[in-house]
Image 1 (cartoon, helix red, strand yellow):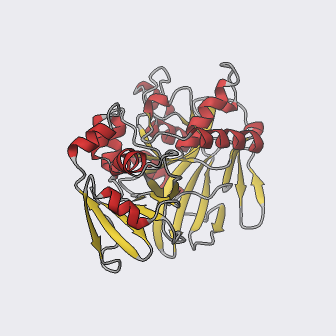
Image 2 (cartoon, rainbow, N blue to C red; image 1 turned 90 degrees about the vertical axis):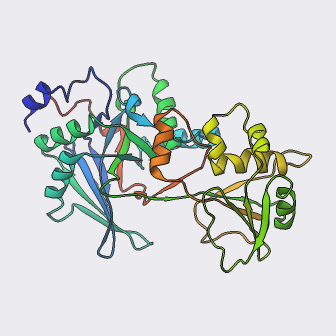
Image 3 (cartoon, one colour; image 1 turned 135 degrees about the horizontal axis):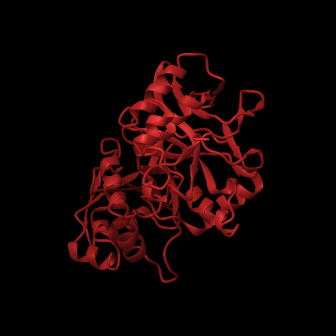
Length: 363
């Protein structure tokens, strides 16, 4: 597909900022033992494998924050302290060492380009401690870059991971008062999840100061609570919370409708069917509230090293289509509601502001 054809079709018309504006950049690649600085702008194809199994394939570029906001679908609220931390990382690193993880649908033309390029040996391969092999291919051909930019330029994308990095980048660019520069872009990995579905897990909660038997007893005042065998009832179903602690396990279901509505007053109606919202606003903030305020809460994306004291509250993961539907309708989920993966390695390829010059694939 030629550049003239793309312009004739209006695909590269930047006056229509309805899709992702993805750009090549001069990256710093990490190999197993060294760093390599690329002097020509490139997109980077990332592939993640465990053994022979292909886990993910996607395209890394820089997302233009000035023209892509209508195409970006955040689905979670953010925590101010975590946004501040990510802003500090941008300043200390001089850019972005870790991309946003964006989930889109379609991108057939970009897929064809990726299939051609990944037929050769990768430019960079890193074996992670968890056994996942991360491979990068540079896409420096301008013709290929135009096809990639055009394909993603008509698509929206869900932020699967990186809400705090995205919010921090928007705040960081406001420091420059509208002056153009490399801070107008952020590193992003775009994955077509129809071809390469992401794993979507829940993020569980740990309340270290609340005994599990006390949590279960209080929950019984507003919901159905049943103690279950810890060896057979392992994962919660949608609409169910599992409470763990002291080698005991309780199933919490069917919270009273009136209690849920009262707890979520002032929040979107859709939150009444979100387990994370019900957990926080009904149970943590009301039912389990202490005289000195709410309990301390920590977030656990997996239970590999789960604490054995206090109360663990397990949630069922939502479905990606449901997350996207809420985001498209303008409804954000409570903070830390989802855990998408696999995630790219930090510092695998870095977008350093000092190494960039402004430009685009049309020039």
